[in-house]
Length: 429
Image (cartoon, rainbow, N blue to C red; front, side, top):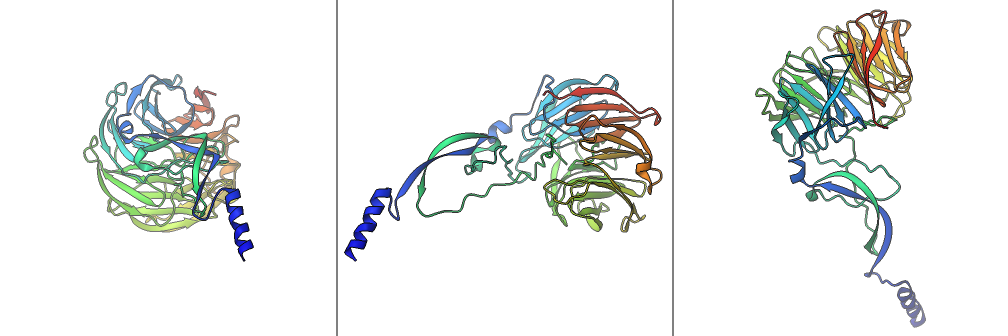
């Protein structure tokens, strides 16, 4: 027995540890890069026009199209002359993924905060209100997944990036569970070849509202701003547009990807279908029904008793379907029936305007259909622009604003027999 004990002791010495000893190791890690909360809350400034690099969601209001530069801020594009759009300025808003505009007030997320910006003079925007710690603390995932991540310390601020570095650290012999990091679901980064921020909402109930694309998570209705989290709806009173106030939150009946407001109802796109809520009581949205489909990512737009839903495969949502579903909706918005399904390549956002249906079919480009005959939509192709990677669109009175992987495009569709591109602002490669 004495010999066995001596051998164990010699082995412990040889390897340099005992049951309670610690040892160090050097390894390559992902280390978070922080912006302090103080810096974050003094960072909203206007700068000169910046090139589009990672464009995301789009929002139209007045003579301007606002393009989110993922997690960086907002490009201000003057479209008063549609054939000659001008990149006029940039509003720095760290952590921005989505926006909405009511009157002269622009609402944007800034990591954990909701920010209100006065854009009455778009050349001189001013922050008028910040509601701190509105949203859950969520860290975006590092680009390089080959290395472990250092623990995030929220007290240091928000994570604005990651750096790969070598680190020497002391580790106890007792094995511990690795830290769990927040996912980047809230930020909804446009993956699958796109580099912006994914998320959809039409606005309803006020001429002072702008118009968003189908991938938005922000929406306006009457005196309220709605923001969709993963499974929670945040509500804000915008009766005084320059100074919104929190008005409560509500858990939803599933994970939400996109939001579209139409005729006093919110239509949520989810991985498993469309959910519908009534806004008869704006601060207590009522769940009234759903239309389920196969598991797939999907935005939805609605017009004149029909919902148009694109389903996309090859994403975190799962599923292997790429198609357009057209669903009829009863007058009370409680019954839903599939009218037709149409195969597509890899669809993202879409828009509808007086039976002109615009579909961003990913790598297959932009497709425009006459949707009058709901049962034969793809037999009525009006135009196609295949040499682009299309992400989302906003149709407005004969002009179509489209964002894609390689920039912003503007089309004239006032004559459906001669739909043509009239403007383009490319991304910086």
